[in-house]
Structures are given as C-alpha cells and as structure tokens.
Length: 119
Image (spheres, rainbow, N blue to C red):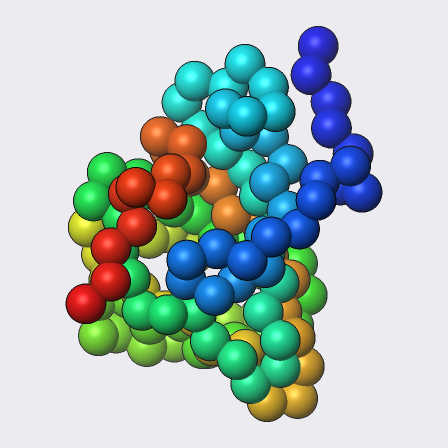
C-alpha cells in the first residue's frame, strides 16, 4: 500500500512556472501509468504556455478561479472544475488577480520534464 501525505511532498518550481508538490509519481511510489501533483499559482500569475507531446493531463481546481487556454480556446474555471488537456495541446492557466489557485494535476503517462515543450 502506498500512501503519501501532502506535507511530505517538498514543493518545487516546474519548467512552466507553477509550484508543484509531487504526491505520487515514479520517484515516490511504484507508479507506472500516471502521476498526481498539487500545483499552486499566485494571484495574477500564469504558467508559461506549453504542451506535452505524450502526456494527457487533467487539472482539478481545489481553490480559486482562473482562465484556462487550450489551443487558443479560453474559459473561466473555478473550484470544483475539472479540465482535460489532451496530449499535444498548447495550454496555459492564469490565476485571477484576486487570489491564488490550488489544483490537482494528473498526468498519464506520468509527468516528465522531458515531455514539456515551449514555443
């Protein structure tokens, strides 16, 4: 059985500019086909627009609201919303000016820095 407490995950800044706590991935558990992380983005801040060639992502907003852009299409999302980001889709999320966002990020296959590409 593999259980990992959020507070046991050391935060770090990813290549796209978000602060991540990797909860379950290849470095913390015998994960083979997915990864789960918590990301935070400060009020008014945004990730760097990017895509993943192989990984499909799902974002689930736990707190706050933001504008999500996927392949040029934009929408406002908030706490309780789940967002599918297909592999190969350019995307960026921008926290609203009035507060930070906190979200869960699930990647399949597991997240890899080598699968993150910028324009």
